[in-house]
Length: 365
Ligand SMILES: [Zn+2]
Image 1 (cartoon, rainbow, N blue to C red):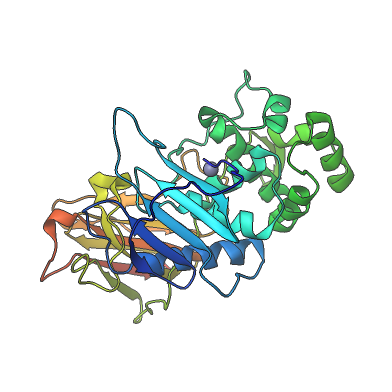
Image 2: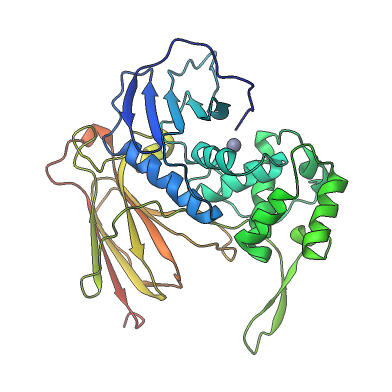
């Protein structure tokens, strides 16, 4: 969500509880903020700048306010980003970590405000923890023109915005998405959006919601494929852990306030653990097996556009007996985002959860 405000809300300033290079976190809550959270928000911001091919300002420009949630009368009921002074104010009365709003902060600092479907759709695409996981086809009942010119896309239509933006990235790349964004200033009519698309890409924008042809190898050959919204994840991690031969290992959080790499708490994926450490794994097409020991879960998501899967979103494993799947082939061409998670109620842990990934170029025999 986002609202463009003329000025920042005039309220007593909340105390700042953490500072990073680009963000400060202020909190109204008694809950702790895990020690690595501000640095993680910095890394998310840097990753968004990298995707959109812009340079971050060399200063703290995001203030993140974590508010108490009044269930009966929420201040926001989610997160919201707004211009404030020469930066961006994010206020959230639900989650502490709002990658979606951090994407908005980067957009607002970098590019002019476009029509809302671009603003929201791009933020949903770059948030690998988006609530929308089913990549269903464009609904017959949806009006593309209504979406294109909506001054504020309704929350229940964010998946449509995600659909259209991901198809632009699929067909024209992130560079094409950037060009189109700049050609659709906020307030453009559907006719103006259509004309801008036609001028840039030489075809009707309707192509984005119509089947497209994929040229599969023989004997299948060119085949008409129904479009679906695409998966994508940012890779915000710092120094990558390295492969040792064909094994790669990563530890989960050992604590919250006392672990410099712990991120959270974040109840968004509560059943998967609300505190985590993040990693980047350099993937290549191979067979991968995952061996995981509690606490709670891990997730992996490739940092590349994936429009093939029927379902999108992170893969995960849950608490239980040590989990060792048969190795499965993954055609990863890009870095992969890995989170190893724990429940805050289990922290601090003398023996944090551990994930070991094994890769092989041969199918399991
Ligand atoms: Zn939003």
